[in-house]
Image (tube, rainbow, N blue to C red; front, side, top):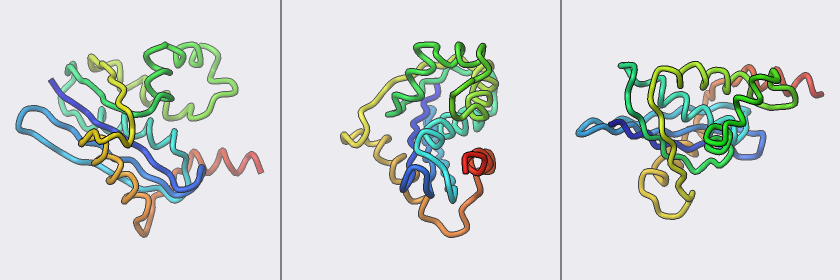
Amino acid sequence: MIEIFTDGASSGNPGPGGYGVILRSGKHYKELSEGFRKTTNNRMELLAVIKGLEALKTPNQEVTIFSDSKYVIDAIEKRWVYGWLQKGFAGKKNKDLWLRYLDISKIHKIKFVWVRGHAGHPENERCDELAVAAGKQKNLLIDSVFEMEAAKLL
């Protein structure tokens, strides 16, 4: 059993942001984080889930993902994302990340657990620290899809 704890953050929405991930299985423990110069909280929440899943080296794993993002969990658990997919994500944001999630999710057995954010859950608090710190780094990465989409709206 693999546990993945995730969180995303952005300072401003959009603004600089990042994600934090903890992967845990038995005695194995790993933290992941990256920061981006311009992004949104929802993108970082979803990217945290994706990066956690992409870090798994073996397919067909039983994975429990802990997230404080109702956006991510509801879209998946209530199957909204599949309706969005059928409609080509018309009027929906983050198509690139949702397609990436759908692709990686096919190779694992995934269960989601919602945790209340900023409520003292140790792993969620740590993921928040990682995400916020990542968004404050120098030399932030470029979320090119987001920035191209934002430029189209100007």
